[in-house]
Image (cartoon, rainbow, N blue to C red):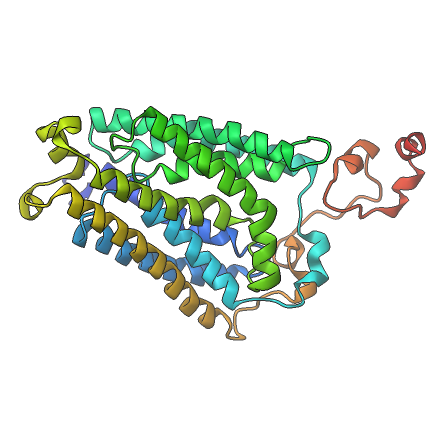
Length: 363
């Protein structure tokens, strides 16, 4: 805690962490909208998202007294379904006109992979940041680490098996490897046991990878839902799963496992919640998960209707996924080094690459 008597300002570390959590929820929602909305629309998404986050967090953590240290419910489930609902309302039937730009390039994937590595390393800290110091914080870090490790192994196996030549897909490795940490957000500080954490990571690795392979295309084709970054597979679904896993683990808690003092500290059974049983706590945990999903879907649908108004300067269908519409970008060079063009697995924009020495050798 930092106190400034001159400015009469008290800055608590918990508030700063909570502000980061709030930002994370909005950033997750961005993942379903990137490339299809204007910066002004993103600002509107953020303003409404922060308000909705504050309300649903108060309901879940204060009124229902749920435990959600890593934000499976409050952050991931809410942020994921909030962005998906907005994307569904803003469906673009002619988005295929700019599909050539909806992809990545080799060097972009490499930088994104660096981000994945940092997230993977610090996710245990993320899930244990606001837990009680001592046993709860240690359990949160260890359980998260085990779930992450399990999801990595599962993702690599599923990704390799899904390709004819056994190669790995960068999208799977960048995203599904983190799904275990997302699902462990609620139950990280509980006595879920090491093998329980491994099972959660294993299940989330399968669910998330299959989501990128099958669910995202299904959503776009049949549900008219265009999920740019696949937030349903990494955040929404694992977050919902993590919330219900937390409910099950909470309902099965006992003094024999936690001790009486440990049970009180873990679930904060004090004050007006002193007489709450673990079974009741499990029910409230499940209710909290439903609240986060409801706030995300209903709130996102309402915000989507606001964003449909023709005043926000959203890009045309053939200009989606193009940074040049809103940003100053350097002019493209007339020629690109053959190796860089070969590494571009998004789209071969430059037809004259066939004249390069590399292409001649390949032919």
